[in-house]
Length: 71
Image (cartoon, rainbow, N blue to C red):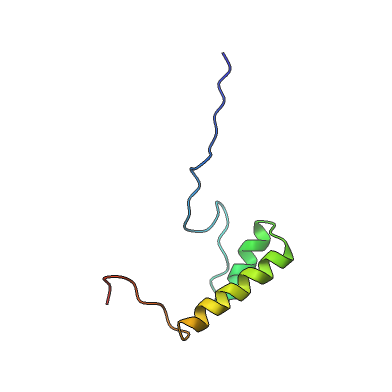
């Protein structure tokens, strides 16, 4: 009998990838780049993600957005 095991759907959607954590001394966007390079994303994808993160930050006036039920 052949048994095949898959880990599909068991990846964590939070935290750093297994065995890697970005340098906490770097700024947020530099940490983002470091993780994306570790995951072998293309340079164009990295640039696009950085731009979207910048837009999100400036949309919230460079402050953390409010969380529901937390003051």
